[in-house]
Length: 91
Picture 1: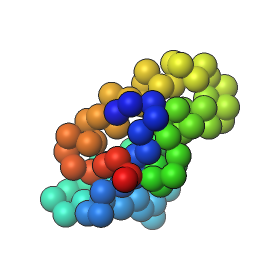
Picture 2: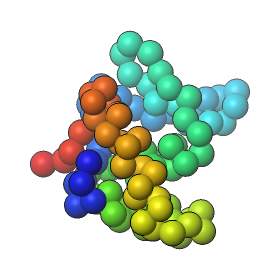
Picture 3: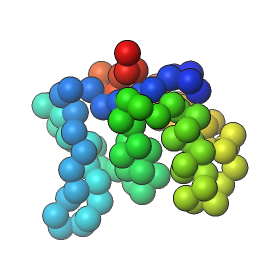
Picture 4: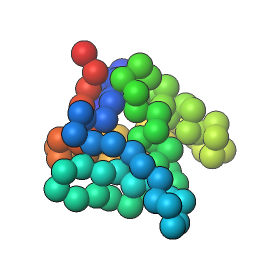
């Protein structure tokens, strides 16, 4: 996913908090994924209005990291979710 792409969750995917653990889950018809803090924070920002670069900048500030390093980390994660049909680029 390019830095100027605007990712959003696919219509069949949704984020929910696990009532027992408090962690975010990415739910979709076939199953679900338990997300770590970084993955959950990333997907929570994927609303179709922010670019990958903007999401990375927000996460970098929040977690005290370098923006370029965050882009390098979240891009493969988003690409994997795109290939699974759970994230898509907003029009």
